[in-house]
Length: 158
Image (cartoon, rainbow, N blue to C red):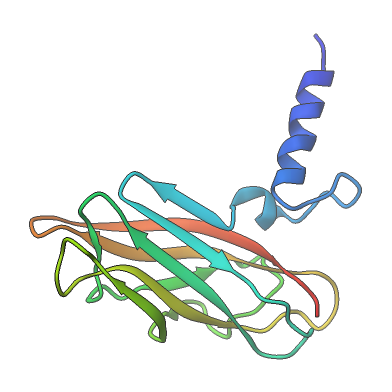
């Protein structure tokens, strides 16, 4: 059995997830990307440069697609991954601070794109990773879906 193709594929996945063959990357980086999407929605986690140990804010963006809108009545939250190096200060963080909202062109009064603030603190030493599960909802006039997406992003030191 040839192991080279498997080894090359594993290294490619590790590098694409933000890790390096030398360090092995973190488990959170290998499990979840900074973006996730399905036909009806897309989500993204953007982490700014942050000073180690100083409070900072990442952003979480939710985009509804295909006639759906973001359900603003659903309690959007971020459940941190226990293995992540960055801390959120609680086991589950409710995302209530909206930074931006784009109304739906075809759905008056509804938001098709919302951006939330996600406060976090990078680790005082070592590389930081912000990782967890985003819970949110998208709806049409007749149907609402409750969704979850695992997201992970490195915290650039700065």
